[in-house]
Image (cartoon, rainbow, N blue to C red; front, side, top):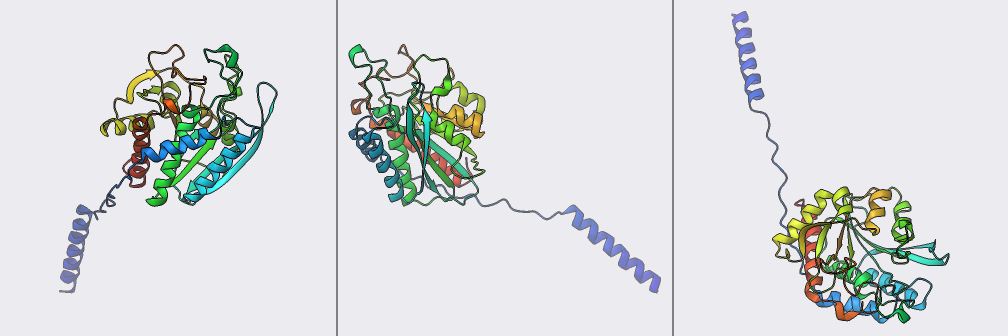
Length: 329
């Protein structure tokens, strides 16, 4: 009888074990968070651009540059960002020593998941493409070339302050981007601020999931193409951003045309810092330079800025970061 009982107990145990193996424990997927994307206020972004332009050309070593630096850093602080002013000395292609500053505004600085949003805040020291040759050696206001990207990022900073986000966001404003040698063969004369930051990030061992650079993102009828450096280093990010924007109704801005590589801040962030960064930049199809008709001329003033373009870019970026925070991007 004892042997029979032991056999029955053994048989029951085997059956129970087999049943447990055939029905593994199911771990439910994490809940999908609702995504509430704040509205991008285009009028506010426009005013941030106008404020920059009002200082005058933001060329390193000038009073206007210093005043603009203080304004940008203090504005980011007023929007709740942790701000670092990364001062550095750069040598221009002319031999001029430039007193420059990268301005970094961080949200949730201890968050493990991070995204970089960047633009350059300086303006060109010469109007080398101005039709009036007598004014080509004068600096430009840079409303679109520099000012528009910064204006959009300041409005995004304000939106983050009012709508807390579960994501680390670093707004990086690069200096001395536009002090490069026109028609020169050495590409490193450009983008001095991003080169410095890429080698000396504001946080030791800094990393981010991806980055988005804004450059010349404010003119009417802007045409944002899939530029070659972005395609080479961050194709998945590029396609996701373009598809998201197109689904939001901005396909007339974010087009699927491929264009040649550009020397812009994202090139050095990709190559030196190893952070996958794309470039949102206006590439008209009907100009000789491939940039806006006002590019590197005195026509780059507030008259070229269009609020609808600002909204298309700004609303797209807000959708990207808030969907990223919810695990949907």
